[in-house]
Length: 167
Image (cartoon, rainbow, N blue to C red):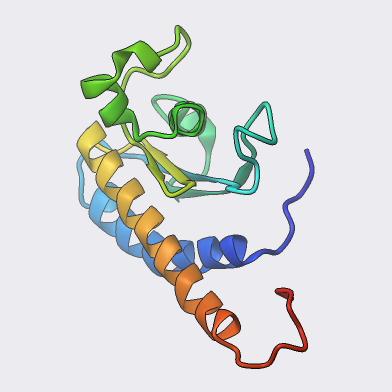
């Protein structure tokens, strides 16, 4: 697998994970009886349906116990499956299930938690319920998007015309 370039989206994702990871781990793993781990997966938005046959994982974070053998289920696989369905359909999973079941494919994961937001795809699996997975995914997607906008705005609004490309 190719390692993604250090893009604005990758930098933003790592910073959002650093910021929210401990908070989510405390709130949704440590404080919830029976929870061992969860996985949050972000796909690379540069691999769109138009230019790629498969999505590419940009980054994943494990909340809680990092030892996969201690998990009840393969949350990393579930998060990736949720993300792939959101990527493929360009819709959040809960919206596919509720309003566009004709987009469901036979190997799609049947619980929501994958979010599609302007090309940013985030999926979470392993929390107490899919609604918590959805909440965390939406917060992470929104935070990444806001971070990228904040970082890009000074470059976009730069009055100099000498350098027309992002560096």
